[in-house]
Image (cartoon, rainbow, N blue to C red; front, side, top):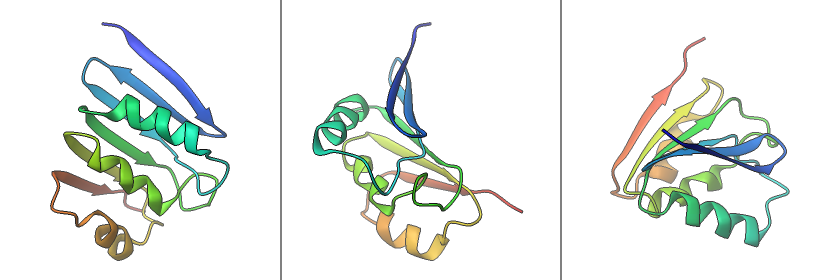
Amino acid sequence: MKIQITYCYHSCFTLQEDEKVLLFDYPNRGITSSLDEKIRSIVQGTELYIFISHAHGDHFSPDVTKFSTYADETHYVVSNDIPKKTFIKKTADGGNNNFIQGRS
């Protein structure tokens, strides 16, 4: 088993193993279009797991949902301080998405 780790920005990084990608803490600022393209190419056609540790802007952007359109299947694992109603609206694209929210 080979795992590829890609540092993106601040606390954002990906872990890739075969056809699974884990994306951690995509921030609300500091991401360039070229970095977005790099992340899109990593998640393309994979089973994507998006982890959001908490709602601060340097660890969470609602725009992270855009990557679900490139993945074959997406799972969201988010902290309980992320507004679930807003997040569900952003992900209600008819795609194959699973949502798990932490408890306090």
